[in-house]
Length: 327
Image (cartoon, rainbow, N blue to C red):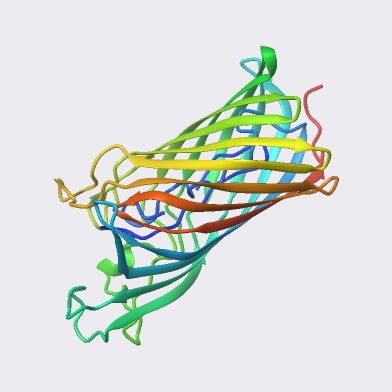
């Protein structure tokens, strides 16, 4: 088992695109299930929007390549994701055009059990670990296109870039800064490479119903400091929900699958191909104009990763049409 969990994501009750978890060299790019509850194929009306995700993973622990729990690895994670979305009002290829920017932050508390030196770190007690707060990789989404189709169908395409600018990354280990002065072990704030993620959102919105799938495919560049190449990853978030007056009730689910094993120094890394599936309920309320949605998920199956239950609270605040364009 490699890496540790976490993932961030650009999302908004109609515009989602981003995020990182326990795949890739360190963090997965897409925060599993973070786009549940969104109308994945739709764009909002013209204007600016502030979206804030508060994502808690309080019980994450390790799973091996057979899906068996390994309590010797424990991780508490909190991901804070502020996002700014601009629905420009412009048209491109007969689609509505929008852009977005996110700067996620994360707090992690990692604990590893020595088990007689199994971790390979000398001088550890039975349990050791450490915590860190830092900035994840900045995420820019320069292209978001949304089409309205017949029969209440919506389709959205987006392309996101994750920059190599995290507060700390696996390069800290190479330079001898992996271990804290007190001997503690911490999980770095972000990845040491760029990512490129095309996204397709599909929705059927009719009579209060929202049936959606948000499909993300992430391609990572090589971390040249560690010579580590993370494999491509497919992440899909699903939503079935119904809105009655100001309330929204529903079910969300997610899957996360790497398409192959990671490589380091040109060779496959054992136990590096991640698989995740999970689901859970969601509940939303529209305060007018702001809206809040709360989600809870538990893992159905996890391999080569950390997994467990997670909670997410998503607040969406319209900021008005500060820069009118188009018609």
